[in-house]
Image 1 (cartoon, rainbow, N blue to C red):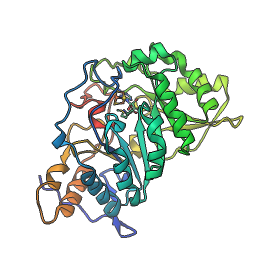
Image 2 (image 1 turned 45 degrees about the vertical axis):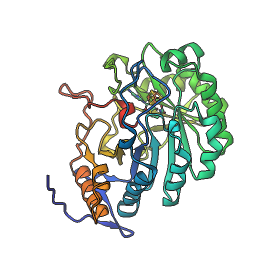
Image 3 (image 1 turned 60 degrees about the horizontal axis):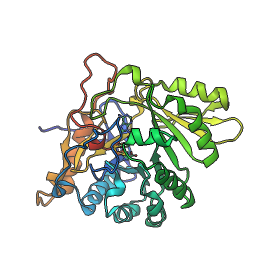
Length: 341
Ligand code: SAM
Ligand code: SF4
């Protein structure tokens, strides 16, 4: 496919990466592995998923090279490492150290189980921020949801991240009707007590078991109302972040809600995603991908030029919105752990 693109406005020597709807892209999500030590019910099946052959996964040097194109040529200001579970990758600290000199806001999304040990090393390597996923504060329910009895490790990981100086530490809670929606208020208390920002995420149709349905989604508006009844909140002005932020009026911190299903934020989406094997996706729900790894490994004299063109073409064809609630919505072939959430 050959796509001819009109020249884009320049920004400090870089070209803005703009799609057909005028959205400027500045945020790169990099999945560094498709493997995980948990089996969260809303993400992976109990038996796990087939994993990529090791040779197919981008090396630290390769993903740094691709990230450099995004930062130096397209002015990206934010990089988030994710997975699978990024902390299962043995060279995570080296990856962080390789990306830190790019000078972006560099963050990590993790299940937190290995953060107790890793947090100080990640901070030293140049990581700026950490998001930890945690869906229940009850040990029995945590074990049912993740299929691992590891609540204590995750809590220790959150506290280690706070102690290592990451600020703010965010705790991501996927809220599912009838599963953990009775813990919303407890999570609000937890955030206030621990000095972390709890972000409530609507369950999305990206689970490997295909159990998602509209009834299992707890709307963000309901979550905010329930917390507001207990600890009054005020809404803060929206940013390009998908989370709508609300601040406690008594100064107890803030919460975020990510209403991907009931309040989609596609109109201000500024992110692209790179899978662990180097496939570029313009949306979580994309059904098409661009193979950057083959370009990188082609032995071409001008891989950077080719990467730039491939990236521009991918973003140029980004669609307006994910259409989760549309009758003709088609789930992507990959589930969340294979894309990188
Ligand atoms: N393993 C890491 C973790 O759990 O934080 C990083 C990868 S995980 C795929 C990234 C985020 O996606 C997590 O916050 C997780 O809770 C969220 N997630 C996974 N499946 C989801 C789904 N079906 N709907 C909404 N969020 C989901
Ligand atoms: Fe693993 Fe994260 Fe998916 Fe849970 S949400 S199974 S921790 S990748």
